[in-house]
Length: 239
Ligand SMILES: Nc1nc2c(ncn2[C@@H]2O[C@H](COP(=O)(O)OP(=O)(O)OP(=O)(O)O)[C@@H](O)[C@H]2O)c(=O)[nH]1
Ligand SMILES: [Mg+2]
Image (tube, rainbow, N blue to C red):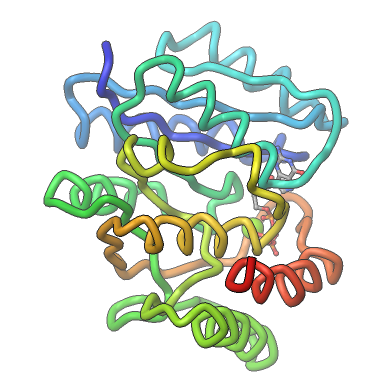
């Protein structure tokens, strides 16, 4: 069916998370989108077998699909591949979520509802009233909030949480963005897409969420990803 919500899940070594995550997301979406929905796992050739586990899920459920990519290229290119596939297959709404339970699958319903209620892009936000982070130390809080503030000031935006990766796009927003010209891979990717949506005149709404640290699997956060955001964000503005 066309016009359905699609949830894109990027994975790199999420073998311990992928099965419980897809089933939790499926339960939430079945209620939030009774007319039908799809979950698309985009795996970058995880050596821990995440791609095979996702394949098993796809064999079990007709609403699960998998894109297998050959190498780890970062979250940006993985999402763009997933978005292209979803748009080509008639998605009406496209959602992003980390595959490590840092984002609560239950919140998918509220993000989707915000778009049903009139937003073009709904952002899961840690930095609006009601949102937050659980169990983060002072340093990590400062770095994250500092990163969002830096991007907000440099880009002249009012959005409070620019680096989060829990989102719901109305199809038309992604259609306006030329994927070939998106260069960022890590956190900068999240900033870039939101910036482009605001620039194109779309209505962006922040929905409070509480972010949790992953309990299973390894972090892929690196200084390289953070550094990319530092130098790429000003380029977005002055390009
Ligand atoms: N397909 C793909 N997915 C990736 C890649 N890098 C990270 N991911 C996924 O993107 C999501 C966010 O990455 P995380 O490793 O959780 O990175 P993070 O959220 O910045 O850091 P932690 O929460 O500290 O682990 C997770 O679902 C990862 O599996 C990549 O290169 N390719
Ligand atoms: Mg994470």
